[in-house]
Image (cartoon, rainbow, N blue to C red; front, top):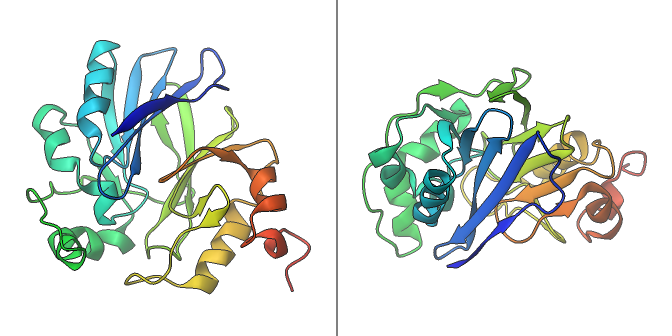
Length: 231
């Protein structure tokens, strides 16, 4: 597993973001916490969830929510371990429930074995209805294309966004898996990510953090997708 990463540009008293990377797909699980209250949420608990939980315990954080940007195997495989110690509600968009229920079959498709049944999701993401982590409000934006029920979480007060597998530093999410759609993905990126302010920091499901302006001007998949340039 790679060492956890901490957001170097976080604002005091707002949202702290730490990533924990591991597993066959090098997936980033995120521990996000409100500095004012010590409340925290786990975003996309993958294979490195054990390290994440140890960090939360060491810092005295209270995990009150689990947010799933989507239900691909690498973003949910840590849920059984998480639920052994944390009984926080799990949020998922309903369009990704079929993927969630087929986690074991997803694993088989990659020659892997899923460790245990997934716990039942508790809450439904509703785009346009924000979620809270302590005093911090996160916007829920619907971004299908990589997965049918993919969402991203935008924190306007902090200039950050957790973008799952929609966009990466220099790349975009794959669309060759069941439910993927390239045109839908590009439309989601243009509508919900490229429309954000240039300085917004993007925390993806794989690889390093980036910014809106960096992807708008340098991502080979997105240069032609910037607002005002897409035919």
